[in-house]
Length: 248
Image 1: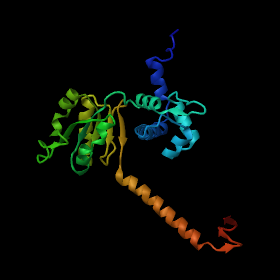
Image 2: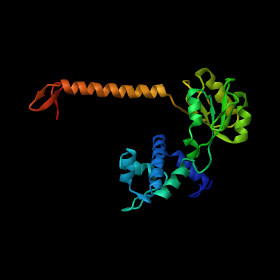
Image 3: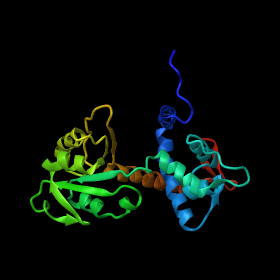
Image 4: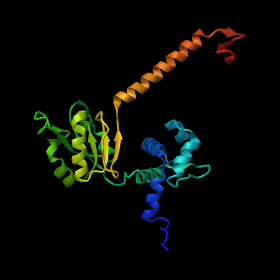
């Protein structure tokens, strides 16, 4: 019979991380950002209600999210800001340097490569790649832009763990293959294509056009709701909706 992993072992920690829902992981990152701001302001503790209000999350959901990382706070005191920051950083993998390579330094890639906030949050951009002869050989934010064919060698030498793809769609899959070939297992994809990767590679897609379309939907819905409310007849001071409903 095999011996189960003891509490605190790597197996137990890995199992706990796998049990955290994807939606909770996204919120943990938001909590960490807000806690960082609170720490800069000198706050030593924060209640779940205060942190929930600052991040726009239901307090019960916040407490559930933090329970996944083993943090339950102290009744009447709340959470110790510095300790919770350390827990979140460890859970999100930020206690280790995550070197980033940006492939495609056109308009979007250039802006991302030049953004100084990544390094301050533990994601230093250490390599830049393109195929445009007008871009290869220049420096952005002090980093030399190298040809895409150098991806395997450069990424391996600089310990790149995250690849950021900002190329045109037709070039994205080939770039992705080069990143995977040199051991990159996490990719943030801004290209308008679905990348095919091995099962052990994590890809997150960012489609700004889709995000704008979603926001356009919300604009249209609010507009229609406002128009419907303005047009609804009133009976005894209440707007009539449909055949028998009232809105105060």
